[in-house]
Image (tube, rainbow, N blue to C red; front, side):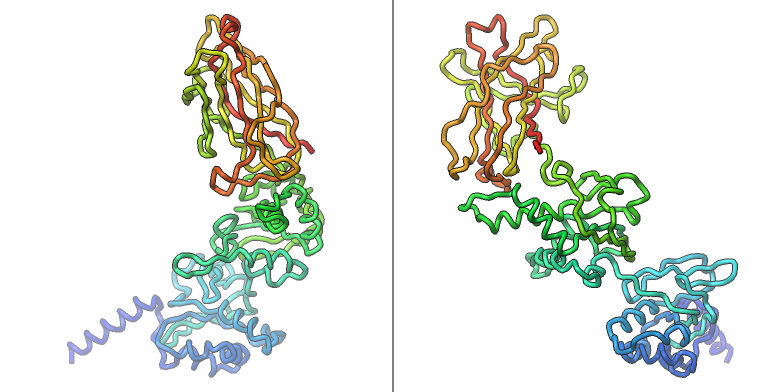
Length: 478
């Protein structure tokens, strides 16, 4: 008998520890108990509608925060989707007693977090005070609350609940792909923002259907595509990407807390301008702002500066009659873009053979640019008697007739650089008839700049035939 008594006490202590509650478990299941309480009748009906009466009658352990009957009187029980959301937003796995509670973010079956906390005046589930607590069923705990905690859709869920953004949402849906494991996912999440992640915070700017159409009409002129490359279909694809490229802002729940915001593609915008007149919606992981006009300028969004570092070989840079070496500008007193530049050392000494470097220029739009080449001075390595460079510039690109010439057209000749300071050489202003989007292959780039050393052998006492190039810059012209 003594052994049985000790064993019984041991099991009871174990149950209390495992269930994290001081209360002895009753013979009721959670579902049975809620059904038996007159003041929980509406919530039990909602459990039946959503199928959770069966779940809470099983062996797994849950905690239920049961809203008062009076607070649920306005709920439309025929709206099964909303009923399920509310029920799931009041049930969590495992026992969640008030003992030892200070503040805890509880992960609900709705996949939302609700704060369960202790205040001076009592305990709270979200914003709802507890009116009864720690009722122990044989498969969990029941708390009673005054009111109910609204289900808060996350940003991604909210997109289906907002009127007049169907064009944008349809485009978002078109970005769903299937991976190698036959699992579907939306590239929006990986490329821009994980809008369905409850642990993240985002602000999203959403153009209405009219604003979407206006933006496409405005931007598509920058993405005129040659017919052989897909024509109008490719133009529309590039344009839609440009529209959404700066709609997402990570770590921002209220953009008006700052004067500027940075998009997830690292562009900065004036808050008061960008969000002017927008209608806001609060989500569980951020906010949405619906706008009737996309107030972005070309230069701050789709028509930006293009800078190609001379040392970058990713796009298929070429050399002719020279060796190219990477150099670091750190500690020289001259700041190269990216801290590096290239040196072009001639491998020929005659005047017949061109000494050249060819730089592919990707992602140019069907738009106007000012073209610059930035040269480092010879003084960076020779402080005694530095000499300037003399350079010529040629280019190829797809002309308005759709062809790409095999020979280069001259842009500027015999431009002299400084021997003592960094020189940003203005080469020419160019309007490209077609956009030239990089698809990861060098073959997709049809805009190429050729930089020639124009100094002759007889001029070597005046000019250096070794050139140092920092970068190529295409500045957009409105």
